Amino acid sequence: MIKDIVVHLTGSDEDRVRLDYAETLAGVFDAHLTGLLVHLEPELVASPGLIYADVLPTLMDEAAALTRQRREVLAARFALMVVPNDLRIVSGVTDTVGEGLAAEARASDLFIGTRPYGDPDKNYRDEEGVLFGSGGPALFLPPQKPASFQLENVLVAWKNQREAARAIKDALPILKKAQQVVLAVVTDEPEEQAQTSSGADIARYLSRHDIHGEIKELAGWRSAAEALLSEARLSGADLVVAGAYGRSRLRERVLGGVTRALLSKCDVPVLMSR
Image 1 (cartoon, rainbow, N blue to C red):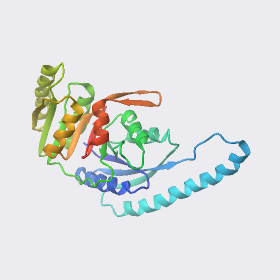
Image 2 (tube, rainbow, N blue to C red; image 1 turned 180 degrees about the vertical axis):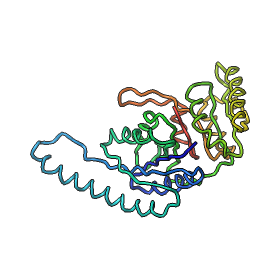
Image 3 (cartoon, rainbow, N blue to C red; image 1 turned 90 degrees about the horizontal axis):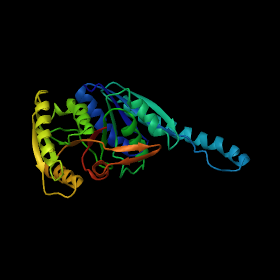
Image 4 (tube, rainbow, N blue to C red; image 1 turned 90 degrees about the vertical axis):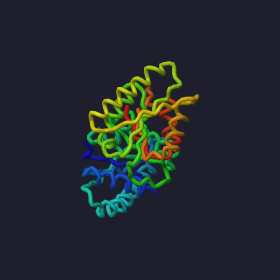
C-alpha cells in the first residue's frame, strides 16, 4: 500500500510540476504527503581565514533567508491541499543533501522527484542519492513537462534480475490501478530464452495479485535502452516501471546503460527500485 509519499522541493519552477503530480497521487491512495524542501548550506571553500570568517555569516544569512522565502511560498500551496500533508526542511551541502533526502525517504512508501538528467535545477546528485540510498521506490518525472497522473497504460521493463523484481513488487499498488500492464522483454540477448520464460513467470505472479500483464517481446534492437524508450512512446505509456541497475563507489555512482537512458530521455514518469 502507498500511504506515505515524500516529494523533493527546491524552490524552482519544477516544484509546481512535482507537487501537482504528488498531490494527485496522494489523493488516489488516500496517502499523507510530505514536502522535503532542500536548504543548501554555504560550501566551505579554500579561502584566507580572516576573509572567509567575515563572509561566511553573510552567506549563511542569505541562504537562510532564501529558504524561509521558499518555505513561505510552499506553505501557502500546502495549505490549499485536500490531502493530509506537512513540509520539512532538509539541510546540507551539495554533496550531502541526497543523503538527507534518502534518510527521509526511508520512512515513506514512495519518493517523487524530477528525472535526474535533464533537470534544469541540475540536482542529479540528490535524486541519485535517494535512488541508491533510500531502500525504496523512487518515481521520477520528466523535467519542464506537466505530468498528469493517469494509469491507462503502464510499461514494465522486465528482466529476470533482482532489481526488476523489486521494482515490480514496489509498484504493485500502482499496477493494480492500471487498465493495461505490458511486460516488455528485450529478447536480443544471450539469455533470450530464459528471459522470455521468466516473463511468463512474472505474468503469472501478477495474475495472483489480480493484475493482468501482457508479455511483449522487443526483438531486433541493438540497444535495450532504445527498445524500451521506443516502446514507451509507441504504446503511449503513462508510466514506466524498471529496476535501477548500477553500483555506488564512495561518492561516485555508476548507472547501467538502460537505467541512465531512462533517467535521461524518458518522456513519461519512471518508477525505479534497486
